[in-house]
Figure 1 (tube, one colour):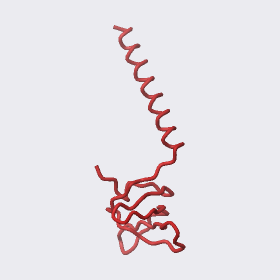
Figure 2: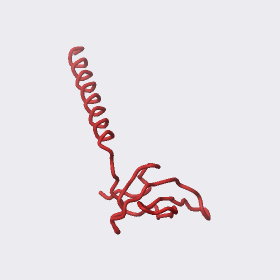
Figure 3: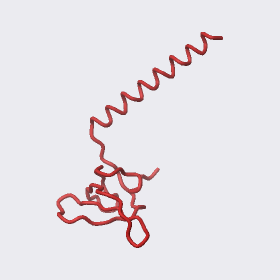
Figure 4: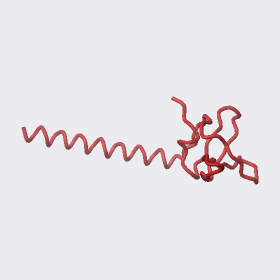
Length: 90
């Protein structure tokens, strides 16, 4: 399933699939009634804009992945405890 620029959060880094360049999403502004996604290419000094439908690969930090795994384990543990409580009530 493709990941689009519109799905990337502000401040997150990503790789543009068609060129392989690394970008950072700065903001979403409105220009002529359309949303404009402002980005900064690695090594560039001037921001540019990209279409919201560009296919990208987000770059996640290790700490974000680790925290997501911890949160998932907590949710799973809570779900299992709730299931046990429900079975105990029967």
